[in-house]
Amino acid sequence: METDFMKSLRTIESDGFKWIDLPRPTRREMDALGRLYSFHDLNLEDSLSKTQLPKVERHTNYIFVIVHFPSWGKERHVPRVSQLSMFLGSNFLVTVHQGDLEPLMDLFKMCQENPSQRENLMGKEPGYLLHTIIDTLVDDLFHILMKVVGNIDDIEEGVFNEKMSEAREISILRREITILRRLILPMRRIVLELSRDIQRFSKEDLTPYFYDVKDHIEKVLETLDESKETIEIYKDTDFMLSSEKSNRILSILTILFTLSIPVTIISTFYGMNLPLPGDNNNPALRIFGNYTTLIILLIGAVTSTTLLLWYFRREGWISIGIHRHMH
Image 1 (cartoon, rainbow, N blue to C red):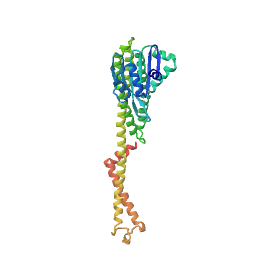
Image 2: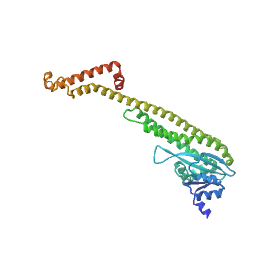
Image 3: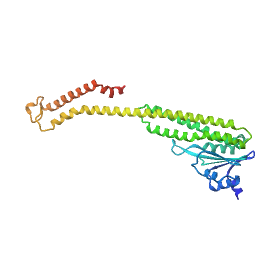
């Protein structure tokens, strides 16, 4: 029964060794593999978990590896952590994941359907295949970086556009870069450890292959560091420009409110029961006829506003608050 069950697994066999791929594995599948290859129970538990730390564990007949790669859920800008667990022995490689690592799924499908590609990828040793899997997933990170750089270019245009606010986009991109850096930083250590330990199950020296992968990881980290520095600059720039815009609006509103104060005060006096020039209680003082009150209000408003504008201009408040922003 167990032999029939093993035949139902996603398995590719070539040149004396097997590649077993388990997307979204069940407890029954992992237990069957554990009995077949004598995997440690703790390693089986770690494979079924989604929150283990990246690590390399050495056993007598196999090496157990956990690495993390980004995958994308429904929220396009927020990468999720996808765990890849691998059991490597002298004649087998078992990959365990949640089915959201598309490059790995495509690689397995290509080996199934294309005999020549199967020979290229599995014609050597399991260690070389493990290297190819990690290298493929690392190379996929460059496609992600292209999107990140493209989003930064879009944000650059929006930051200096006064009609747009990029605060939300900047925050999302900062979160994306932070998650990617947290995922990729341990990967460099894992690759270095594998370059030493994998030689137990390989006749060919695979060190140059893994060092090439390490160089790719360092380039990814370098690009992410540059992107992080750039987005921090844009964050500060967007904050300063938004603050400047808010201050400009407040300064204009303050000046307009200040200019309206004299007119409000003069109008308030004419709303009182006091004998004032031009009102109905003093017909003798209606110098300009029925429009005396209106004309007096206009003269008072224009005079007071002119004096205030002259004072603001002399103090330089208008040139700082309005005129400078018009150019």
